[in-house]
Amino acid sequence: MMNLSSARRPDLLAAGAAGVTVVMWASAFVSIRSAGAEYSPGALALGRLLVGAVVLGLICLVRREGLPPRAAWPGIAISGLLWFGFYSVVLNWGEQQVDAGTAALVVNTGPILIALLGARLLGDPMPPRLLAGMAVSFAGAVTVGLSMSGEGGSSVLGVVLCLLAAIGYAGGAVAQKPALGHASALQVTTYGCLVGAVLCLPFAGQLVDDVAHASLSATLNLVYLGVFSLALAFTTWAYALARTTASRMGATTYAVPALVVLMSWLALGEVPGLMTLAGGVLCLAGVAVSRSRTRSARVVASAPRPEQTRESA
Image (cartoon, rainbow, N blue to C red; front, top):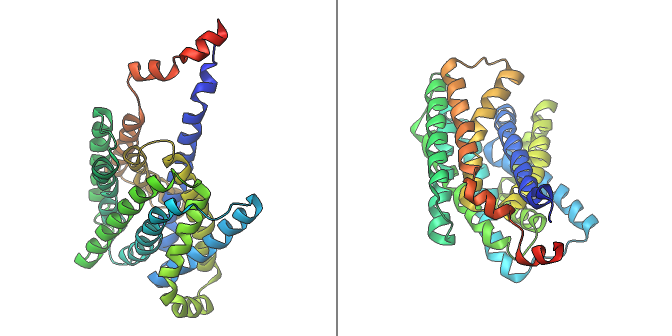
């Protein structure tokens, strides 16, 4: 009879990959805040994408990954334009206009848009546990946003930019899903990053100027964003997305605001209040609910297939 742990191994690997993504994306908010003081939004986006493209390209060469199949290119191109390129620029710009709480609240409408687009365009199921988890996590994101809204000024422009970032994130994430049916996670991430870099090439002059005047710490944050929160995190995202639905993956990213609060506490000494901590707990609880399965689903998933039963008889 099949070992239950080996049967669950793919699910555990996908969950682990999603966890890496969430941690890296949460750390990106701290790095963007730091580097954004010395890099313009477009230059920061281009620099991050170029660093990520170099790292991913080297990995592709070592692994001898060829070009993605033709069928994967529509999804790669759309995700590259909307997520790697457009999202990166407007998020960097938006975080310069609004406080962290407002930005986290607005950008975290993305998972809801992913769920709606996934159900409409990809036929993703919307089970009650997913909907309930999303509702709990969104309540947590609202709580975090309200608790931190007094940390700095906000502007209509900043809110609009963060909302546009959420739309780009959702559209790019949903576009990736069909591409992963034809190409590997590494291929989809690498060429999506290249598409985004090409989109951001008009900011090359700003990047050269900013690099010449930026401090070492700001440039190291840019490199970190390219290596870890882009090359690593987007690859683990694509790996996990290929093994689950876009809606479920989107709900998982609701943990990001909670981790941002924790990282700001540890790295920047910003002690969160009780309301902020409560919102973070709600975000994590909602993710746990959205990724859980009913007892009957677990039984079906762990039950041996007929051929396995015959082999072990």
